[in-house]
Amino acid sequence: MRKVAIIGVGMTEFGEHWDKSFRDLTAEAGVRAMEDANLAGTKIDALYGGTMAAGRLIGQEHITALIADHMGLNPIPATRVEAACASGGVALRQGYMAVASGIHDIVVVGGAEKMTDVPVNDAAAALGGAGDQEWELFLGATFPALYALMARRHMVEYGTTEEQMAAVAVKNHLNASMNKYAHFQSKVSIETVMKSKVVSDPLKLFDCSPISDGAAAVILAPLEMARQFTDTPVEILASAQASDTLALSSRKSLTELRATKVAARKAFEQAKLAPADIDACEVHDCFTIAEIMAVEDIGFFPKGAGGKATAEGETAIGAKIPINTSGGLKGCGHPVGATGVKQAVEIAWQLRGEAENGRQVKGAEIGMTHNVGGSGATCVIHVMKRAD
Ligand SMILES: CC(C)(COP(=O)(O)OP(=O)(O)OC[C@H]1O[C@@H](n2cnc3c(N)ncnc32)[C@H](O)[C@@H]1OP(=O)(O)O)[C@@H](O)C(=O)NCCC(=O)NCCS
Image (cartoon, rainbow, N blue to C red; front, side, top):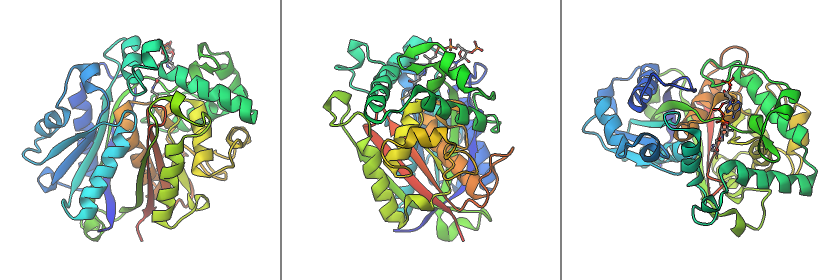
């Protein structure tokens, strides 16, 4: 296995882009990443693209063929990767494995989704297909409803409160206000979150990630070649993925994601590191309760202590473990296929010391991304380090 590095990153602003198409967004992110890597398109050997529901949301299948064509990358292999909201993270893992194995040298990994061209109910139905369509969505359980069940159970078992969940939203909106690419640029208070409309009790509007458009891209190369392109390569130390049951009703526990626990354990083993070694982590906060469960399941805090730790500020920038410096899915937005790649973009900026507007974690050397598909049936984790 060869060591693999990220040599370039780029993303579009996340938000409602009624003036840009799917292909415009992917090209914008891809060109920014190629410029960042000082790389001509002729050097790229393969493309992996993560998108969840382009067929449902924009009526376009065969999406990576479109992107390769639009970006003038033909005839390189262009492969679509779909794993619901983890499509981007799993695409990154495919690109990582292709470079690590020696099959390809320079690989571009993209993630994109265009969600606001359809009414929100249609977007919710498309997203709901990432759960068990026959036993959950058909019976009315959309994603806010599934995570509301997890939230309620977490409250019963560990005494987690709605105010503690609100603290996740307050922190992530604050971080997003320092990120020019974020969907939401405004700070919110606990009171605003608590008074926002109920979406699926106990989750309110500000407990939910939004419906967003956006794209992100990273360029991978063997570490031994990385310095031909950049002075600041970021090495991928570990890439781990795990799966769990699709339906919540089949799980032993509603208060943990087993796929996260397994992927995190494997990732720490590969990287020969422990949770205490991580300087910044992007976790999959599709709902505020999801961030609380993630910081517990990864091992930053004991089970049941994630809500209290968040409310006490332990996951803020400058505190014990900065979580979601980008604003996370909650504040930065969640164009589902793009999210896993955007997490890698943010961690690369953190490790290169380039996170702007006051959200840089001082001296960050090791970072982590945690990307979840559906209600936890897929989890993919990457650990990265500033290359020496
Ligand atoms: C929560 C949700 C239902 C809100 O949708 P909606 O009620 O149609 O909201 P609208 O698009 O009409 O927006 C109404 C207002 O709320 C804001 N808003 C929308 N979603 C928001 C969110 N998640 N957080 C904060 N504000 C939000 C909008 O900006 C808009 O503000 P404005 O009136 O100042 O312009 C929708 O964002 C949603 O389904 N989120 C979950 C997405 C999801 O399940 N993703 C997959 C996770 S696994």
